[in-house]
Image (cartoon, rainbow, N blue to C red; front, side, top):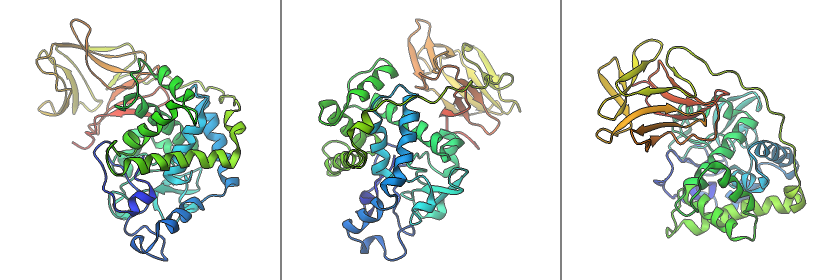
Amino acid sequence: MSNSILRAARGLSQLWLLPGIAGLFALGCAPAASSIDEMSEEEISANFDDALTNAQKKPVCDHIKSVAAGHGVTNPLLFAGVPNHESGLVQCWKDATWACKGPSSDYCGGPVIAGSGDGPCANKQGGLGMYQLDAGTYSQTLASYGSDVVELDGQIDEGVNVIVQKVWHCPNTPHFENEAEVVAFINAAKPGTAKFETFLTAMAYCYNGCKPGWSCHEPMRANYRAGVQKLVDAFGASYWNSSVSAPPPSTPPPAPTGCGIISAGEDLASNTATASCSGKYALAMQSDGNLVLYHNGVGAIWSTTTSGKGGKSAIMQSDGNFVLYNAANKALWSSTTSGHSGAYLKIQDDGNLVVYSSAGTALWNSHTNGK
């Protein structure tokens, strides 16, 4: 979810649509042989494409097919084409030592690959892993997406989630009622179809921040198209169209209970509150309709900004969405995390309000840790 290598090398600035987009190439993280300004686009492209051989990419693609199948995906090519453009399917820094060193990974036996579009590598800001997942600093990204994104399957699982969300909410895509409709759309977006062209626009627009009409938009669509086509050329259409069994589902651990937790099916009614275990942070459903997170009962550090709109109840729904409703059951605000049955809300002692999946992966957060 980053500026591509070529885009960062050309000096294109980060764009408004996605927070914390970061490129793999930036000052101080280029190959030692020459600076970015001294490298031609062809040299940069060659360095990027040669990081992994097709033989090395094949097991990564096998994992993408397997993990994506668990999401109901029958067109995994698109979910592999995106990171093929973003990072050449590189997860580990040892395979692309010109990039920044991210957090340590058991899969890599060392650091994951990290981008540096937000400054020098020492700042520890930029996208992590092959999908270049980015929520600010490395620690903020792990808090937002879950610590398992440093591992291969965890990175792929979250990458699939992010792509689905971007297609769902991008202005250029059709209206979707639920996640299943989004997945069905992507499954039908085979190269050569109108849906595939819509997908490419969504990736350039809402995954990479190149709005239609901007000078970067068409080149970015071409980059994502190339990321897909290279994988078709490498492994053949039959490989990507063949079915793959989803990995056997594991039984998720039960959602935690106790202080600071709002479990699936539970709610905060008007004039009630629940606090973190330390008692320092409290989430209050106020009578004015605003849902507010307080520090030490005084300072408001986050809210749904729904004062005066009639908010009556904040519910942690069984579908994984945390929603604020008015008396007429109209949704005024939500965490947009539906599709994650058994998810729960946690008011943490670090000040962060987080929706976690039943497996403990962070799906949404208020970005208030440390406040």
